[in-house]
Amino acid sequence: MSSDRLRSAAAYAALSAGALLTVAPLLLSALTAVKTPEQFATGSPLALPHPITAENFRTVLDYGFGRAVLVTALMTAFVTGGQLVTSVLAAYAFARTEFPGRDALFWMYLATMMVPPMVTLIPLYLMFAQLDLLNTFWALVLPFVFGSPYAIFLLRQYFRAIPQELIGAARLDGANTLDIIVHVMVPMSRPVLATLTLITIVSQWNNFMWPLVASSGRSWQVLTVATANLQTRYNAQWTLVMAATTLAIAPLVVLFVIFQRQVLRSIAWTGVK
Image 1 (tube, rainbow, N blue to C red):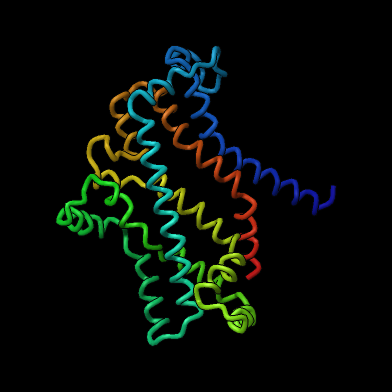
Image 2 (cartoon, rainbow, N blue to C red):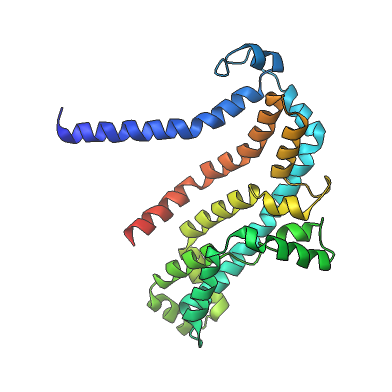
């Protein structure tokens, strides 16, 4: 066997091992979720369930997990839509609009990525307490809906790579700034927008600390907080905890399957640039 084939085989073996390590916890979670507590306690964790049961999922949903899923989905959709709209507008301003202090303002805004979220947690809590917005839907979404430094940076770099001739041609056809953003910049940026959509959905779906602080009770309890409370209440019943974890993971897996082609295109574009 040639050295090239040996290197390829080694590379595929390493990638396969990494994929197995990544997927194994998800499979183990789903496997445990469809077992009875007796099967989990007496058998091997890797043993197939016999028979398969959905009782764990019914118990989790009766606990109020269904409402937490709806609240999380609503929060995620609102924040994702707001972040994409505001990030596109801000990125176009930083990439294609000339105004005094543009670059300095951009780098100052980008520097906020260096600030740990814990530093702003208490001031943010006090602000929302004074506005009487704690334990409301607005407390969950307002801190995150107006763009993010990472999204604006990525879109700015993408917009700067779009030829200026296309924008000039659109201006000659009578397009204003909003028309250029909607009909030129956004269609040409679909791969990176798909990637940002997936990243935003995952980050908001998994958001834990701020929803834990900003909400109390079950009215506006999100998925991560509900899972933590469920684990506290049913500490020894791992089949229930794994059922909750599987419900939390499943939408993200489906989204990745849907967006995987756009994500790979965005990664390929980033590597070429």
